[in-house]
Amino acid sequence: MDLRAWDYAQFKSAFFLKTGLDLDRYKDRQMERRIRQLMERRNKPDFRHFYEYLVKNPPEMQFFLSYLTINTSEFFRDQVVFATLKKEIFPELLKKYGNGLKIWSAGCSIGAEPYTLAIILDTLKALYRAQIIGTDIDKKALQEAKKGIYSGKYLDKMPQDLIQRYFFKEGEVYRIKPEIQSSIIFKHHNLLRDSPLYGCHLILCRNVFIYFKPETQDFFLQRFAAALKAGGYLVIGSAEYISNPQKYMLKKRFNTIYQKIIE
Image (tube, rainbow, N blue to C red; front, top):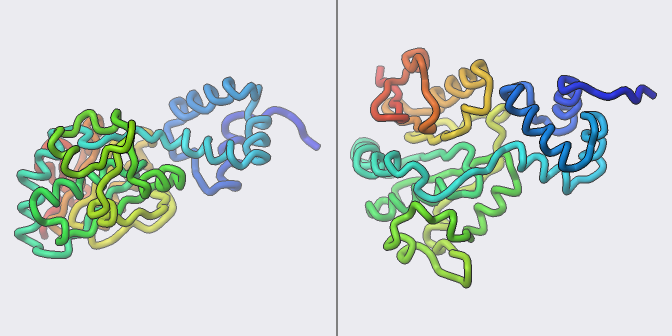
């Protein structure tokens, strides 16, 4: 048996065969550094030892998958974006398409983003006119999203009147009210492998591109553009940028918000 230590490339190959998660799509230096930090904390000296440790310990494998997906989330994260959605984008889409808006929060993590969208639509008295779908690769994060229970740190950017209106305070945590919780469909979805959700009027994929190589970003943008209806919108993160939106039949309308060109 060959017991020589693996390099990072060998680890990526074995991990993909085991889990279906293609680490080769991510920026190598950034991802390798992050994995090595966890290896050091787990006292695993090389990639072979670490891989075998993950395979033999399913809870650690689940933790590692969550660790890789970097679940940073909060309600009303980037307030300018949500203000623009409320004042500009939602009124336009509701006027143009009426009922049946399809909204996709891609990489929704623990659910703060899709719940924020539902709250905004409810304040516009239009929640019943939309279908909101939150997807993520991290099953543990999706379980938390479905619970709808959050510590106060996730609500720091949320107006106090909305917290009182849409949450129950239960000790040190906040539970989102049932009418908002029941309005979201949460699904497990791998952006790298699974088909996109077609026929969307609005797609949010924020702070996801920054972890991936340029060719993977291109792959995502082609898929999102195909999933959008003409006139629909794609929202990306504040640290992200589409250098050639015309390539994807998109045009920049607001900061980080792009509209699919109507032919």
